[in-house]
Length: 60
Image (cartoon, rainbow, N blue to C red):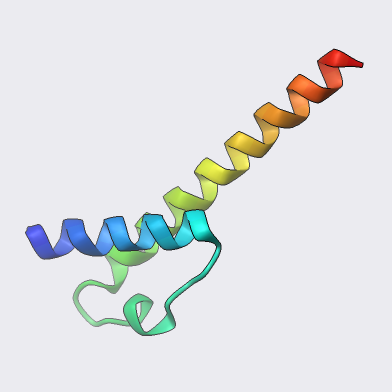
């Protein structure tokens, strides 16, 4: 389970940094955890950008 959590966290960190590691994503056993983490990281960035847009638009 520790390996899966580390793969997820690595994917999330890469998603936040907008860089995908194709080797990790393609790993036969841990690739799924990495990809889910990556998507979660990208979604977090999207939500942050949406919040900033809303703040800017409300301030106009």
